[in-house]
Image (cartoon, rainbow, N blue to C red; front, side):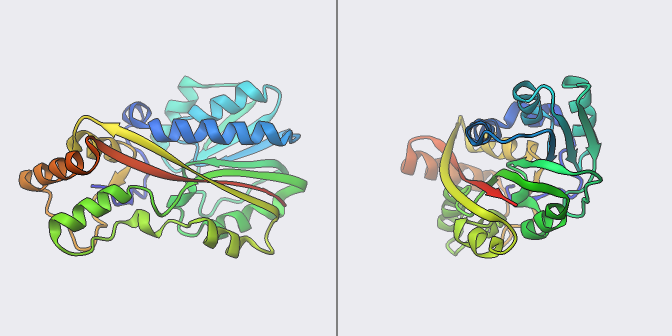
Amino acid sequence: MINQVSTKGVSYPQNYEAEASAQLQSGVFLLDQIKRDNCEARNILELGCGVGTFTHKLQENYPESSIEAIDISAECIQFAEQRYSSHYTEYKKADFNTFIPNKTIDLLTSNAALQWSTDIFKVLKNVTPYMAKSARIHCAVFGPKTYYELGAALSEIVGTQVMIPAMTFSGPTEIESKMKGLISDLKLSQKTIDIDYPSINEALRAIQNMGVRGEGATPKINWTRSTLTKLNEYFLKEYGVVRLSYDTVLISAKV
């Protein structure tokens, strides 16, 4: 049930907010990075704002900045507008894969969203021409080791290598290679966020509530009661708990 993100994004934002522990933690890392950079962020663009939790933190730390926050989910945008409305923040339904800004940007940011883009480098290439001189880019993305425990568990149970789409997320080496020439002063750091769950059922439900669908594993998984029982047994044997890791890559750069 962990495989590809819905093309419509999150349909039930209340569920997303309740399950987004890893996104909350990556947002803490990201905001700390932004504040340490001391950048002058008059106009901020956030790609993939979700339910607006990180947007709200930006509002609190940059109360006079203009923030444009976009997300592909109409439900998330409506939720964010109701929960975190602000005179200085505009929530907009838009696909960051094709989004083109209509004003000059001082800070481009995104928390735990761009790993789901069709091409993260194309997304940034679309936006950077509209960024001010010496503008900053600060993003957190989940890397290829995200959910590696689940991939290993499924491979053990099925008896063959199981590929899950998180394995195709870009890691630091690929990000550094592809971003050369597009941006300058690129700095990358990596952190691991571990989230524990009462059972594999709870873990998979949390993943699904974050807008992820289960059609993308190769080979296709038959999610029977027996499969779930074996997964629980595997996690308890290997880790003593059902634990999923989020491989978090923090990106800092200048245009």
